[in-house]
Image (cartoon, rainbow, N blue to C red; front, side, top):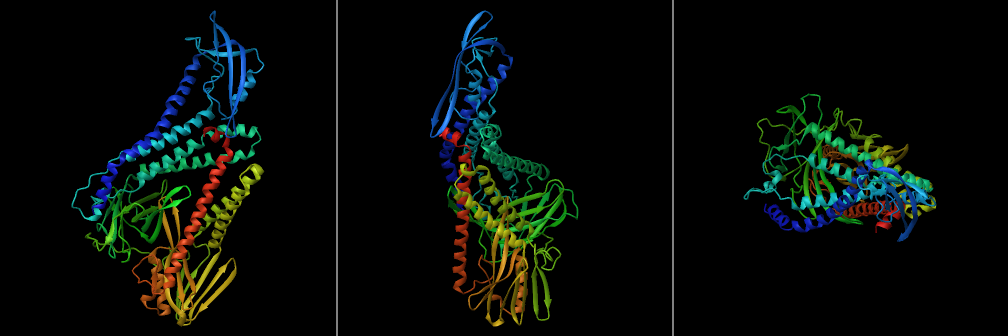
Length: 632
């Protein structure tokens, strides 16, 4: 209970290092803005009233330099001119001509206009004729390059200072553990909508600021014959997508607002009830369908090739349809879950902790509803206290929602038959196919356009291998079906993969246990969807898959109960390696396999992370190496 208070005091006492760290970044961005960007814009504005006069070109030159292999340029010139009978000299060629650079070809083009010429037209300030300039146009490419430092460095610094200096809300002492966090004290838990909105705009602004110079630099690169620069258009296109995402989040916020969640009971109880209600600014209609997902996540940080990342690993998940009622603001959503006993409490930590989240979504005209809340859930905390108690609304295994999409269940006189059809998870499968195909296609396109001037073949080959594996996984999900028959004769499975049949059979006395586990997790924004799989274990160590790609623990439990009944297995022989109300299977092979599987998954994730990071930075460096080397 006191851990949060101590943590908050520690944050207050150590805020100054973060403020100073952010101040360094902010100063870099502010320096570029105040001493470079603003003066250039001011010069463009005030030069609109200047007048042109003929001038003598006394000298012109194109200075060159090098910085770690990158060639830089600076055009210089001196002029003599008369204004209202007075003689003047000038040497300003352009608005931003203070130093050498290689952003675009302005220096080379301007030198070509002056080289060998005796006369030129200058723009002169009539209020102060000693001020003059040859080219009063704004260099958009250079301005965009400077804005990267303004937005990225200044924005990051401002955010770091704001978070470092933010004071935590005071929490009264003597409260129970689930009220030791300020956002849980009054049982009006706010959704993640506002945080997601800020993240969307921040990410969109930073990405577009970084990619803004590319369209201005692209014509010069194409003029030099660098056709591979066309791939750089992907970055501003992604930026437009991020901008559209931020706009959608803004419209969603304007339509639904914060949408607080009131829990009942408070807090949620492991082994008991986890329920609550949400009031929406939405006209009530009995046709509304809201999907509620309750997830227990193990959250931890791990080291990667470019620092650390936060990972959310679902340990348990279930879903249901919300009960829709008329509410104070239009519509009230109510839900009630009953999670199993052996799940962990909500907790906090620096590198590892557990969180419980409620996610409610609905497809609606205009902007969809999509909200998430982190809620307190503890063991034996209580039961629902509402006068009108609602019952858990778990989807039945034979309901139309599930029938024909995930699994078809048919009970026979000899047992039970399960059929998992083709295309049962088309959204996830198509996403994998498109993502993997994009990896392979991008690598091929880059190699075809860049040729020998592109990154080493090793990087492209690694991208192709990763993309091909993801693509094959998506095709497998699209093109496989599974038929399971369980009864007194034993267990039989027939897997079809694009018409190829693979059959397995095991006698009844060879079956030892049934295991359920989370096999795959997909993430879309803040939402995690866990897909369960079911395996039957045999005495000789075989594991036969009898179910996969099933979202929702209640669906899995219902399917297992039917298989268990058909095989006449006791409840103690049903296990779950992610923590559940079932007892752990005594066989040591399960734990060892689980550890080995976690290591394999971790290794694949690290490989993908390293490959993606290396390829991204190799691409950026190769395309803009002159600018980057000059900056360094």
